[in-house]
Image 1: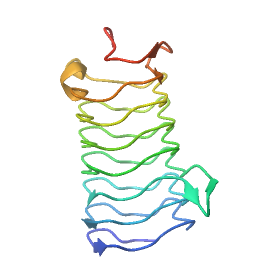
Image 2: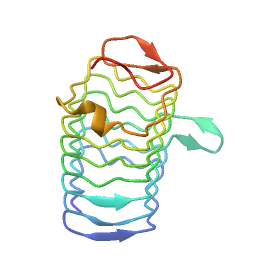
Image 3: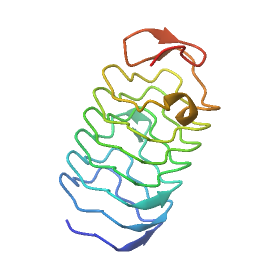
Amino acid sequence: MNLAGAFIMSLNFASSNLRRADLSQTNGGWVYFNGANLEGATLTGARLRASNFDAYVDNMTIRVNLRDARLDSADLSWSTFENADLTGAYARNASFVGANFQQSKVLRADLSNADFQGADLSGADFTGSTLSANWRNSFSGARFSNTTWIDGSVWSSMPTTP
């Protein structure tokens, strides 16, 4: 599916197979990707604020698959990624300001210069992910509660080391 550059607002892609879809440079928001397969999808430069990448479909927990997705320079602020799987995602310079990452898997992801200010990272797992040297600014005001950090240690406050 190629929606590159499209304006999408309040669309429902719940449980859709969007594997390797091109959503680069899309604009809009309040898009519902609940339970969708976005493995290897490209959202580079997308601006889809307050969208739902969470994983609750009919009260069942199904992880939204964002494995190996390209989220570089995307603005996904205020979006929900609860229970999502972002293993191996590329999210350099992405904005996740105020986003909900509760119980998400963000393993071995490239988060260089990604902005998580004010995000809820409760129960999220960032093991093996890459951060920038200014990582503390990128996570300013974020909520840590039983959050697994990039080195596998568990934190309930801002980690002291990257």
